[in-house]
Length: 73
Image (tube, rainbow, N blue to C red; front, side):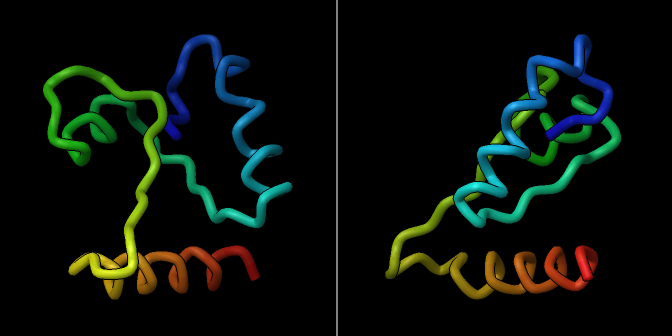
């Protein structure tokens, strides 16, 4: 989720939902940077990362989840 979202209130239900479902989340400083990381040219205020069992990204996603988990401790 982008921390520079205006108004921020449009995102504030997402952390509560993520915590309720035990899903890790992070805020990034810029919606422009989040858009670039997502591969689009426009600003993005929120996105999700999903994978299926056979995904080649599964190990990378797990590493990110572990790194985020360490930040929360």
